[in-house]
Length: 338
Length: 271
Image (cartoon, rainbow over the protein chains, first blue to last red):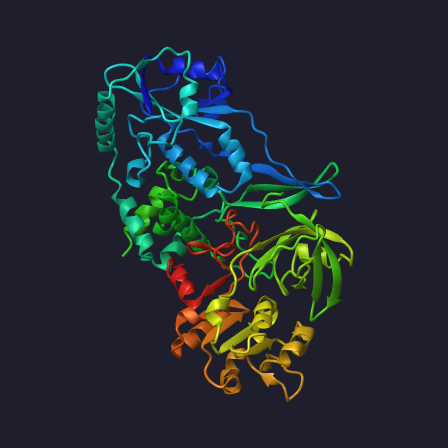
């Protein structure tokens, strides 16, 4: 891993954008809400200070909401693998990078995901201040970018400028022509200390810790899940915005010369998610489905497989849920249960 | 080479009715290349414009890749399949999932308990065990009524080499056995020459759970009770999420689970 000193982060952004299409979180037409959009002359400078996450995580770049899997042309089935253009995602936060690493593993055998993922270079930014509702340190997903989770990592230093870390050969190659000075080893120790200071500024998350324990001990009474289920509108807001959620359904639709199979995001909170052709539904109640969602996020069983929980502490579910059963509300409720 | 998500063409080579709303299909891959499968595994069929669904092997692919399935008309895909004729081409993916624990059954007294349309997933393992002299095997097959029974041809063959009891919720005459398969265990135990040492079951989940509880309570080790579970399997490769059962996916970790494994998965959640 090579380390450099960088004066202005947007000098890096412009340099990278001159080589490949670059996407970065920004408001659309002056909107306060951040979205992943291509860099243009109107894009504001990269924000520093209290971080704000883009409304949607980066998963849409690799696992789009809709995509064609194959076509049937009247004679045979033809696989339709994407042929993505190389691209750069600039300014990905640690929680979302951990989620990308999680999905990289989940979709290991998926040629559609992998084609898009391989064409994408990730540039991470350390969060220097806790974001609103985030609890990444509790689930080991931040606030600073973990080793190996991005090609390039930017860290704003307390004294001056940025520490730029190249974590892949491809990332390092894209820095050519930037004329950067190598950074001293002591900068790494400073970064480690800085992370401890940021972590200390996060509000207590004992409700999350206790909730995780109770889920793993199967201690939450069925009645409490059913009560939480009453608040679920089955809108799929949480599953759409969750950076690790990956369930999909697929269906055939008419195409010019036959049919094509499209897959699109699905949600385990939908009533018919598990319903079989016979009518049998193993998860027929909203309470069962709400429990399923949180079990999938916080069970040690999945942590064994993926090396981390399926929740990276971004807090998007809490912000989007109209039934007030996002992560903080649910974990407060179940950690307070008798 | 097509990816895991893209079907390949197979031809329907034979169709006949077999039980209420059920048909017996024989398929053959257009390529002539056989994809070896094991008893208990499953595959998917795709009909363009009507989607895709999962089915079990009734007989395993032979050297030409020809295999059989018993399919009941239940939803969109099966309704479209029942419109197809001999010679028609459709899509196929597979095989998927795990298989019955053949090695662990060797030399044991095996009881097969089937309910309704749960008989086909047990057919390939019944064929396998009936060819093994050292493994005594018996079958209890429960149906709602005689008209609902499937696999008449296969059952005739098994009658020659294993004890079979057929039970009905609604028998059509006084000679037929009334009740569920579990009501007739002692009769089968006598025919098998002793209490079963391994159970293989497939049918409605309430029947399988009752069987699991019964045999576990009667001292059979839970790791010797095996169930074939049904879930809604879309992708077959553990990605789409629909077939979850606790922390496992039935399409890749199943569809065969031991009573011990199932109990552990069910204890993970409470609702």
